[in-house]
Length: 177
Image (cartoon, rainbow, N blue to C red; front, side, top):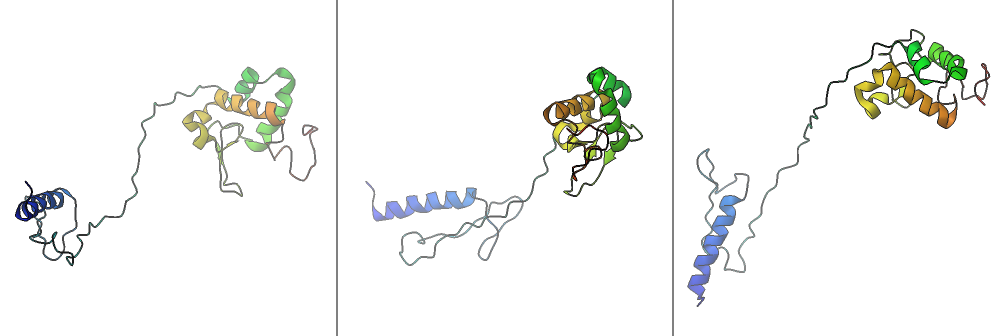
């Protein structure tokens, strides 16, 4: 049978367990050492209606750095020009060469261009926008970069490369149809 005395005793034990196993910040009336749990006197606190509420203090969440393990990327030794010949159809080699001339005139597979007006960067032979963020280090592989560039070409022609197809609508190389 549950009596008032029993209730207070059981309630005190339960409340003490909650306080002992709940993280809290040390404050007045509380002690904390490396070896001891946080202890606070709670005698008769829970049975009086006027008793102050026990507040649990929380700590602000701190940002966490997540490190993702990725496999090292093996890049081919192919040049940007050889990648064009491997990936692009022969009838488009001229246009792809114009893109390389204007976007990456040194034809450096590890070229990084930018920042662009919107704060992004361009990567690899064909200066693929946000390539590193979207694809990782493999964007610097000339064949992979040429494949992504050819996919862009199939979707929009040479228009993704503003150095070849300026936004002003001009078509200096006859490639911006």
